[in-house]
Image (cartoon, rainbow, N blue to C red; front, side, top):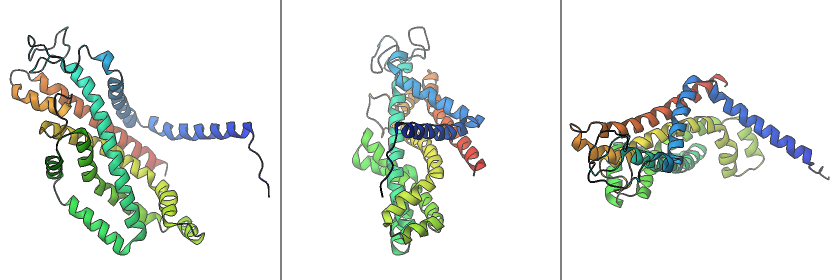
Length: 295
């Protein structure tokens, strides 16, 4: 049996349908006022990170010994820190750091957690018991304690921060994916795939995972906010990025020593962290509300 050749018109129509489905999916976001506010805040910080060289009036590491802990002025719009560094410049460049490390950490934890959750939920039995009991043991530890243990063991650096957040976040993702897998694996199309003789990995990653992507995407957005808090906390405790790298948590830690004389130095990075986390949470909440409405 010969197959009909694909014409240029068919390819154009396929692309149009793809763009149409993409727009229909994106339009859900704009139907929620909460999601629009959240994505606007997140986009603001993304633009700050992209255009940091244009926004920053000075280099993030440049020091001015004659302008230590200065209030906002024309030369330093948000003031200077205890080493005479421009706070606006460090905030702008620090947004790059946190907007790279947080999504990378969540992506890694989602990849690991999804794999473990699919295996445990689909195979069940002894495999599920072993995987889940190990993950439960990890989740039994307080989150901050786990961060401290991991970073203290392997040392503070950008890569090690990603490793720590991945290790701590993967069990929660695995439990979510496992619960979704336990529900989806009972569906008729899973039985049909098993009857066709499809492999277990095909069923898990082609049949089950795409049908679990909705809750997983929303959970991942919330986890990016948690990762930002974790990076800020580690930076505040001196276990994040090594100085003098612009780090919002490290900026708060350095400025707290001078909180009574220069309170704005603590306020600016605190506002940056909280606003970005609030934006991500609003976006995830709005998207969840609209997605459940269309189910």
